Length: 304
Ligand SMILES: [Fe+2]
Image (cartoon, rainbow, N blue to C red; front, side, top):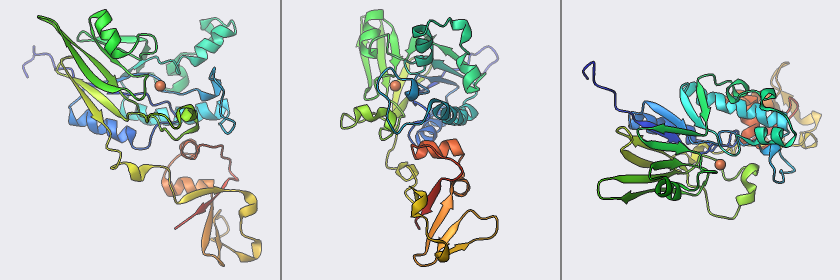
């Protein structure tokens, strides 16, 4: 590349992740596509957090409280931030829930912290729209679907929002063409936050890239079979305190051990911290995987 030659812009677009409810393996899939297509820019298409606790719709009775969900979301967003410290984030309807609640409560914007401040992402820019190489990137809840918006605005358009939409369509004029790209999502359809959609069409799990300075859109569906093993750990089962083996059948692993072996059945009971160590995950990450509240006394059964 000569000094004056501009580097070709290749953009990775990450679908709705609704943290802390993203699908296991989705992050790895996005990294894989970023590398495969030699990307040098990242756009999150929006709804990076779910804010289930603050929904205008009914919340799940088993859901985490606001503080807990936000903390888990921050923990999981940190994993994305570590991978992509410089990125654009389209503000989605779920991201905006807190601002809307503030509006409903008559609270001026000055009182509200910025997204980056709350989420710990100083290198991310949050806007409703981004335009690069004459392609518009926007979440989609206000713009209409990509295929409608692209024709109406006569501009190539990339959207998320509709989790089941995953398409790339072109419209050709005599000397000009535009595309509409719906990038799918990376949310876990089995989590309580999207229970309302249970039994309906499954989310299209994938991301997309727009290569060669806005001229080449490509859909990147996730290989669900490849990442299937990364789903919630089947070997760990949360149990109630009364299910613990009685003291006369217990054998501790040492004074400081939190684990218990039930000699009569050979089953091992372990505390939350041991599960974290075993799986190499944080408390927040673990509670999001198991969709529930955890405390230091929470006990799990480890099934070999
Ligand atoms: Fe969404």
